[in-house]
Image 1: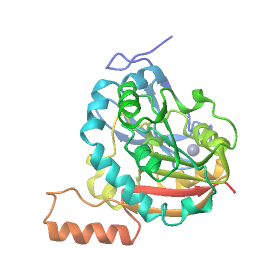
Image 2: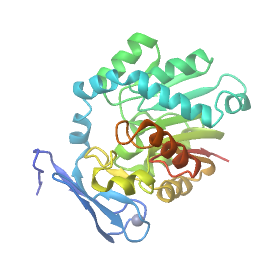
Image 3: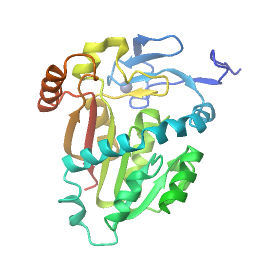
Image 4: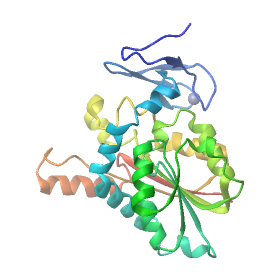
Length: 278
Ligand SMILES: [Zn+2]
């Protein structure tokens, strides 16, 4: 028997993909979805969610226009993160050329264009077809228009795999990170950025926190993200976080103090982890 949600999407009911057990408790209830928290590992996820084909159909033309409108902004944020982990200054110098860089969920391809200028070999994976067409046309970069597992890259292929605001959308995050580990070269790096639930902002805003979203079928904490990376075999090299209160929430002066404090104490609501295949 197939069940549908209010939007007419076929749904499935899942167990915690880390523990593979059904031992969860209601975490937060919204109008058309809810999160549970695994009592064993603390992972927060949508227990009832649309099947992958329905999820995929959400990343259509409307999503492309959202990506297009924000492309400079998203690119600048990714660039700041790469600077924080010393990507240009140190990491890329650890490998002899040619250095292969894969951006999963590469959207309009801005980041691929940037690494191309650094003389790296750019590869993209993106399920939003209009974004794929845009990246190929504007930046002449190689982008696969399917999910990562379906591309079937060779073992030990990339020096770098980057994903920003992607893992929270992925139906099988544990297997997904294992696939990333398989296709990374030994000593290669994963650079993974996602919203962080154990943050100052998530506590401050409660249900209105910006990252509780129907498309975010998982919400990670620092611990649960480290857990799935470690399960795949990654060694954690760096953890940074940032993201303050939104503009207009308070005066610019107070905002600047909050933003700096949150970053200093590493309690921001966006987290980036640098992991290594050693
Ligand atoms: Zn669990």
